Length: 521
Image (cartoon, rainbow, N blue to C red; front, side, top):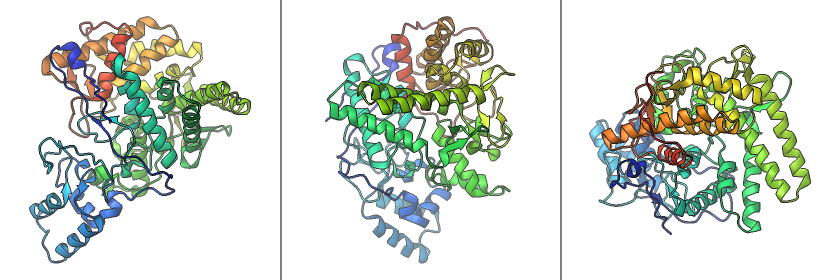
């Protein structure tokens, strides 16, 4: 099955140009859920994996972990070990030729061994591939992704054309539900090296977008949401606040370098006085947050070496879990399940009360994260402070106060700033990200702060419009202080990013009119 989905604002702003995000599909998943995660590239290829990544054979660390073995992984590793023992791979060129001879590299890697016009996604299981197959077609969110990414999907789907939207939404929800059924949660992406972590829990919002269908499908979707909630409420993702109330943090089951960033994460620990496992878990937790990377997770607010993500109780995550609990309660009510309804309504109320108690800073007058080690608010203003408005967790008084703070400090000529700190990290100033523009826009409208919502939407759309008019491209994030330019990142800035397209289309559909970027704010 193929979904001819076209998602590009370039077509809206520059008529005649119609690039589209690829839709990919694969074979059906296993009939029964697996109790264990499939082996990742690091586990399959051991020292070969380490040498390829540490010797920086490819510019992007995702190149090798996304590669498809041409023959069984065990045979490739056997031949590598034999060759390495004979000294055949001491030079980078020799090792690179071995990789090219034994793997199909992803398109766009700069070293692809795929024939012209081929797809990097297999249609049947391939021994050693990191890709986890899905039964329904799915959208790739950008040139680098090569997978179905969790929270990206929600914002990308916002922009699906009306005549195709339901088909795309339903297929995506089917895939995400199937991942929950197989792994107990929605992974960061459908790659084996992503399975130990999730991403911000937006599945309930995508389920709410999906078409009403037969009772069995509705039951599966509701069960998937309850399973996801249980995942977040177990293990290292749960913390107790000073009064004993449980809230949540980002986490990762593994405490090793990220495989797609193995070289960078290894270098981060080398020469550091900190225990490597803790640093790596904190970096992985930051990846689960989607804010990869940001001063928000740094103990000193400045440097990556001090990252302590697992020490933070994040306002965005707990806002989304409040929304998840309210959604489950509503769906249980529709299914006439009184016990479930009462339970999740109580959980939502408890979380909302705890958020108002611990994640609202009365001195600064805005929502913020909580520092577990210091047992006090982090007192750092970020665009994550808009999430309680987005999910309806904010009290009216705090929502209106938050609007005034956002207008005064976060609003920039090209949209909403991510943070007020310039560290060179992608999730810091001066960058503005499409998801955060939508979160603020929708959240403000829920509390009748329509003028500010409109201003954010207009500035961001104008920013993207200027960039498209200048370069003919749409990218994943924008400099909101100098409109029309892309922001920095820990990897090259990629064009054709789905959530930018999706959010801009959604803003236009909501009545936002593109306007010239505002004067410097």
